[in-house]
Length: 402
Image (cartoon, rainbow, N blue to C red; front, side, top):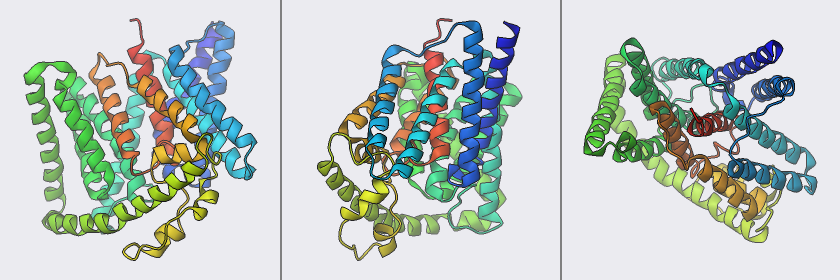
């Protein structure tokens, strides 16, 4: 039993390292970043399975959630086996298996170690937040990216992190409440400076949290939520003004200009990608074109050139659907999409008794909303690993008999 406990503790140590590393891994797009994610998840899984064998006991997620995850994995395996592009499908299958493994590890994670894991996540988020500010103030970047390859990918991380850190602030006292609130404010500043769709996703998710009364506490809860939201926005703006009056003074002008870019380029290009993706899905409705094959199939379905969108956006650089749901349907068909949606509905179906748990739920909802404009759960490995890990933690907390 002592050896089993030691192996389990080592597995949890690996997961704590994972939440710190994920945000610093360039989204998992670099060779070393993706390799590191896979090694950490694999090591954690091996250590945990070894402890399970020694104990002779496994904590299994609720059957409906586990079945939805396994059905999606099975559909991915079937698609990979029949794929005309085996290398791309093998990589996509490895990533899907990694996401599933980290979900099960998150579910089994020892409750007493969760504060340490959340502290590791907060440390990684803080490093990214400070670096993002330096990008804006020191390098003068128009849109901050953190350590990610672009601002939209970074905003996906922030969409998850802002509600989680806000939940931690609400559930803490004294010094720790101030520390978590400050981190939430710093991440909000970064989110504003990404000028991306993550800002809208977080706003909608936090608005839903506020209207729910932070746990259905009536109008007092709604009022409290509104004051907290306004305070957070105020803190973000105060940090902007104090750190760079010139940046704050130009913020309105930059916002209008960048919103115009969104309307002209981002919305139109995403609409064009969506039209092509829907045509692809119509042609391959049930099992899709196979995991990892969107990039190969897309050229046959892309729309004609759109004069108001730079040519390279729709005709040179499209390697994913920029929408989690269209990506899943394109590569695993409507059957895969049903399993994918069923999994997330089941994960988020229960409410949490804890503010930290509610923060995780709101962060996952924000990430799902952000999935309408990007591929956080399918194409950006670091964001997907964190999402599935926190999904496992959330299901574990909401199904904990204690």
